[in-house]
Image 1 (cartoon, rainbow, N blue to C red):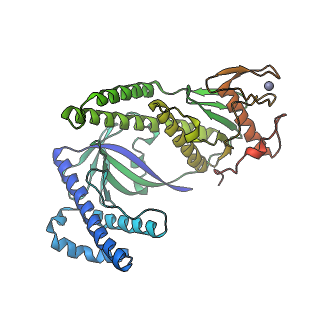
Image 2 (tube, rainbow, N blue to C red):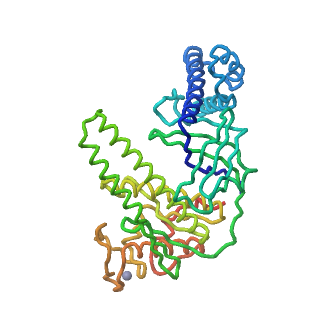
Image 3 (spheres, rainbow, N blue to C red):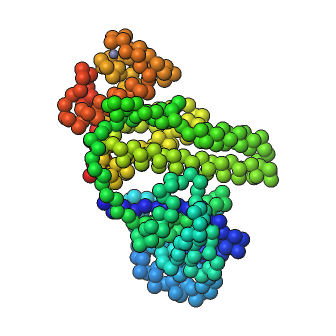
Length: 402
Ligand SMILES: [Zn+2]
């Protein structure tokens, strides 16, 4: 299976390079907005839909009119226009809103389709050479990136399609390397896993023999505590003041750090699981209804579960496995995995309970993962498991099967 994959590295341009990049961002934005305003006018007044070829044929004229555009990498300007064309196409298909003007304060991007080089300098450092810039920009890998991904770009030089450079609103620069890679499905392991995501622990996996507990990483909890502290400090500053702006930047940076750390963690866990199990049973998440709690740490947990499910889905596809989603009204925590008794009194705060019918002692999340595991078996064999009722009804069609 051929799949597209984007590797992201942190870039560290010096002052001069930052200046160069800001010119590139600015010119791409200028060209995009210039043609958007022309085409928008014609579309609104006469209903004319512009084609990419029209932008392309007008670009040389525009460069004559605005000589400063010569500072830009011309291929980057062309990609900006392709992006505008795509934005229009999505709008005409009804899949997106009308194209928007690009703002200087939002994330900035410049695409570089050709004539770039990514070179390794040492284990953790590299450099990027791009057209029109005489000096290479330094690349550093993120501390938490999975080891297997380090310099994967180097191994896959042949498959690199294009790169882009972005600057996030918190002032960081990133190199995005779009690659095409072929993923071989793995040999079947004949193993099924039921996975229950939790609050106290990140997830519990039951595979028919063992229960595996996946803890929330300590470094993440630490980062989250720091974010809460920084937000508190921000709220005490006078809005718009210099100190407020400083505190706001600290919050933005810390937030980005958590996003990165989370993502790395989720990648590691989802890769390990999808490689190990042919069938993975999860609950359909009802993010909105699941947790009423508006606390920040809970919001982060919700987002990462959603992201985790997404990763499990596409990685299962890569490796030839499948994801089975249990109905979201199926009570995996409340149903005794031994006799099928449904404990309707069980509230979220109760972590351990004893089944009044068969007497089994339950850990809430372990019990849930065992129930999900059984759903998987039921689904795979097409029959019913145990004495529990109503499983097959709640099962959705697998979305992960190729
Ligand atoms: Zn029971």
